[in-house]
Image (cartoon, rainbow, N blue to C red; front, top):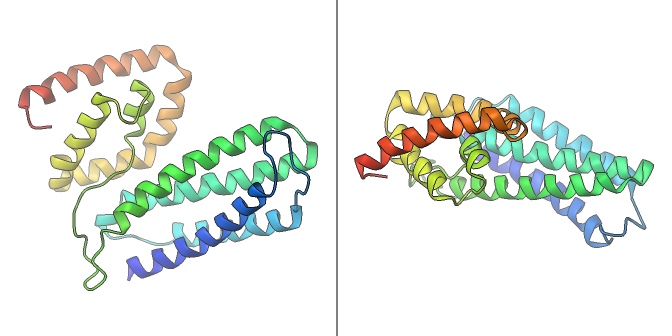
Length: 214
């Protein structure tokens, strides 16, 4: 079953992450690293790459079409963080440390959100207890600057209570989560397009708020 496979992969990835974070705990990221343990880091990177590759080959059922890419993205962030630490060990450039810590934070939030959803699976029948998805609205968060902004919360509720209740809505959400992280990064760098997108979202939110449902 998908649920069993994914839980095994997450547990294996969590062991790598815990070992990686243990290296960070033994050092002071603000002042650099006394012991880099490059061999261990390279080993963690290879193991995480294998887990990500195997997860990419898994075809999840529709209930997990949103969660699955989020988990892969979180693990990819951690793998990138490991590589940044390896790069730091090679050239001692503290920019690698800053980037690494940012990636770890992103990975932590993504893992937390997806794990909370996965834990809603009923272990007896493998079905989801509650069809509520907690993944971040990447584009909306990039536009409004805060995952807890009122506009983002409204759009998230609209997704949960309207889109995910309809087959075409689930397809739309699946496509959205596949491409939105890349679009969000582009919007953060392009203020003109970001402002234009915000106007569109604001107009859509006016319509949604008139419905008084979300």
